[in-house]
Amino acid sequence: MPYTRRSLLGAGLAVAAATAAGCAREGYSWNPRAAGDPLSTSESAEPSAPPQASAVPSQSAGADTPLARLLRKYLAPTPENPSHPMYAGAVVLAMVNGTVTAQAAVGDALRFKAGPVELPEAQRVPMKISSIFDIASITKVYTAILALQQVDKGRLDLAAPVAGYLPGFDGPGKSGITVARLLTHTAALPVGAKVSGLPSLEAKRQAVLATPLMAGATPGDGFRYSSVGLMVLAQLVEQLTGQSLDQALRTGITSPLGLKDTGFLPKTWMSASAIAERMVATDARSSRGLLRGVVHDDVANSLGGVAGHAGIFTTAFDLAVVGQMLLNNGVYQGKRVLSEASVHKMVTNANQGLPAYDPERPGRPSDHGLGLTINQPWLMGRLASAEAFGHSGFTGTSLVVCRRRKLVLVLLTNRAHPNWSWADPDPVRVAVGNLFA
Image (cartoon, rainbow, N blue to C red; front, top):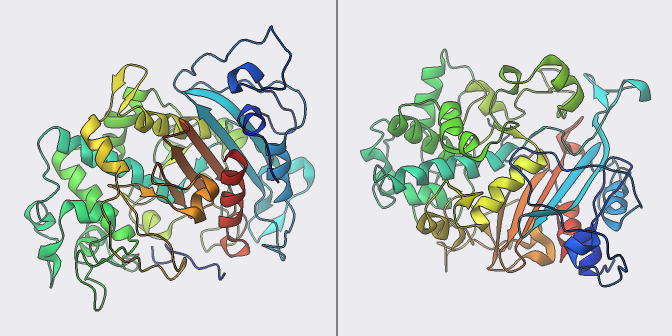
């Protein structure tokens, strides 16, 4: 498959073994009792306590695991990706019933400097469970949650035309775009917005609102993945909350959930030493040089690094907490972030019977709730079903939640380091999904 960029404008394994495995970069730990391992004879192991928000799970040494071996496989070229490794490094973290049951970190968070030039071993930064990633389009999930919080407060009507809230959102055919259609990618908007060369941030924001419909498309006629829709939704969130999107994120999500390792513009809330130790690099050959702690998406960068479609940085654990909150119908550790009704709309297919227009993944299902994709084998492998939801990110990141299994699965890779065109991240997504299935 050609490695196109959505945002260019802007084998078998026992279930118990898969869910029990956990590891640090080259050392692994697991709790057989927590995973229900039928082969374990240990009587002293105690179930893991439910993780506290922003806690980093322990990384004690132990035996090698199938999960770690699978991730290390993609540190070298594979038949699916014969010219280059899939990524320089990767992290997987899984929760079952709110307990971390598997974790692994392999490879490097930083392997190349601008050029790209491969760094000597001593200058590379090893990947850690606590490494911080640019999660790219998974940002859309957070923007959706913030919008639905406004629905819960009675400030936003999903069935209302977007133009009624944002007068600048006008143009032929756009009166048929409702708030819900932005969230389900059925608004007939293109993938990216044309903002380069404009003189100011305000001019760029207005250009996002003025983006025309795709030629020949009509709102509601099918699924077309669009970053523009979530850029527009972010401006709507800002108008309703009276806060910038990064402030709204803190108020609505990260502060209530205690997520101290999540946010836009990480250089504003991380020390230089923390960035050096924990920040995962992306592109090393862009016009902006090595990208590390700076958003990879060009349009998000043009919008100041804070946008509705991309720009959030986080850890595997913090992202898993968001997945667990959704699995818990809007509650995490006693704090309600979203109403049960809104979560139900997020995880229920709103695109039943609609075609999907996706040149990158022909034949994919159009299944999508409000802000979450549903039943996608290319993302979820054999975990895919009507009970599974999640989102992917262009930088090689994924969140998958399987309600039936009570599983939250996070896969974070730096496949865009040093060059996003080196690898298609879908094979490793499928392989990790299959391992847990």
